[in-house]
Figure 1 (cartoon, rainbow, N blue to C red):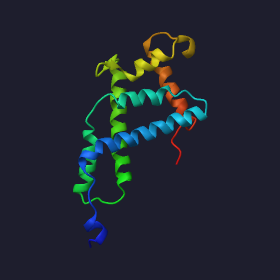
Figure 2 (tube, rainbow, N blue to C red):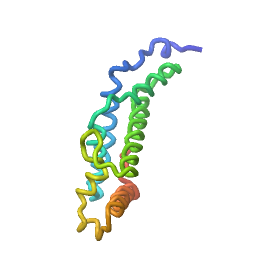
Figure 3 (cartoon, rainbow, N blue to C red):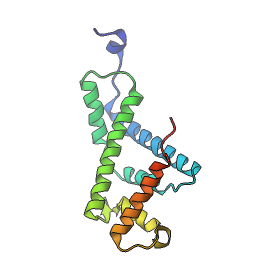
Figure 4 (cartoon, rainbow, N blue to C red):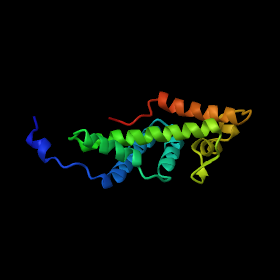
Length: 156
């Protein structure tokens, strides 16, 4: 049964999705940076991820996510839908970052990859003795895990 709310609800214009997703990603990462500062943790990781996410892209995946939701009859809380679409974009960014680590890529889209940028930020004195690139990447991964373990998560 279709309710009055369902019948009159206007879908989120697809042209608005990229800007709304960017705003959701920025809010999430800003909150990560704020939490990191409060816990006296480095903010380099969320900053690097934000630079990566801001480095280009048409936000096609989140737009298709919203389009699929709408095509399946979804309606309601646009903010929740945008957060899901932003999560999909963040997951894709993770996959690209992981791929760059595994392939030892130095650049992506003409910019240093996230792991190369972070290993340049944290030199040997900060990371301890390093015996090659793989050890540096492991230490950067450890830094990210420590931040997660310290509950460097957005406030709810």
